[in-house]
Image (cartoon, rainbow, N blue to C red):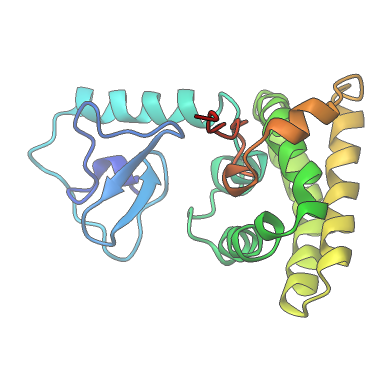
Length: 206
């Protein structure tokens, strides 16, 4: 029977160690993982950890991971049970950092991801058919996005992502949620695209 990261001695599940996304620091691999993530090849049973602590860590991860944020993480990790450092998310994270956050023309899709993405994540995570739906959207869009990123067809990757997002918005009745020009202008592009809307700091004139 497979174990979870919360049962591993290397995952630090002490109170206060969990982040906003329900992840705890792994002191063996220097990564962050949900307590509910499946064991990896470095797993070591924490025999001195009481079951209530593990249950609390599982609850924390479930509550914070499903409360919104990154809908791609919800789809791939929470539902399809891939590790947080899977090749799909890592490729898209690098794409976000190296391309999307550096070009103003992509700012609107980053901001939309931060404002609408959490609502998609909640709807998907609470759907009784979430496994089927997540697999369908993963198979139909994610490999194509990664293929285009790897081949530097960035606009094509963005187009496929937007198509997937718009279909999910329609599927969950979220088309009435619009991102305003002001929200886009006020967003910090360097911190956008994480599933949490961040306003840029304004330096006062002195």
